[in-house]
Length: 236
Image (cartoon, rainbow, N blue to C red; front, top):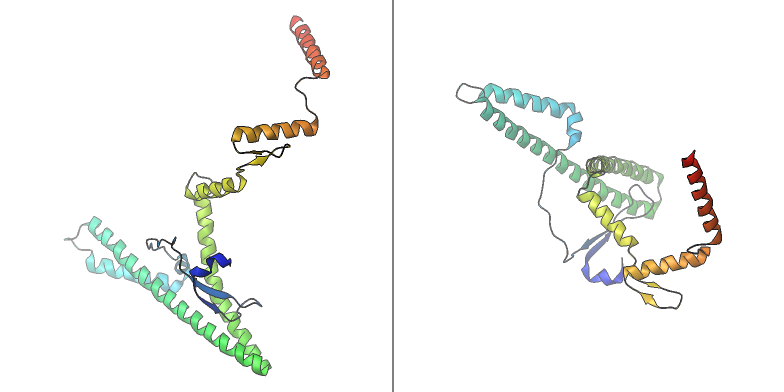
């Protein structure tokens, strides 16, 4: 972290070792450039592979149609209301699972910190074995989160990679910033800023490097032979 940004630092904490042999560091910064984004919910695709969740959603749909599919309710109204009901149930299920996961990760992190301190004092094998088991459990939870983020970014790249969208525009903007040349110094140690002057200096440099000339005697001979051969070919 650069010392110019130390004024933005609010808190710092050394976390216990989990899957690496180094302790991660968690910092809290407050930047004046930060703009909170509007919260948007996204479906957690992992619940679709959970048989318990899919059975529960199926039962909710069956109960809904059994209670609300009547002659007084039009099919369009019934369908639109069903989408809201299912969406609310999925949000509730995802929120419950996320809360349980966060609690489990917090619990495992605290246990790992305590076991690390005990192992440093005693160096007992049983404590180290228990510490390794807790680290493996924490790694399993973290891998699920990483896998979901990986799938999401793969989808984003597939969706916006070959299109002139915001993702591609940002990548091109960063690339253009890296390749931008604001000035150049010529052989006379003079600084050139204008694009035409920079291009002229590049042209002069490579002409001197490869000893290029505008027109040589060999080029004149080649042009003469080519014109003669072309004229004879057309005459035939």
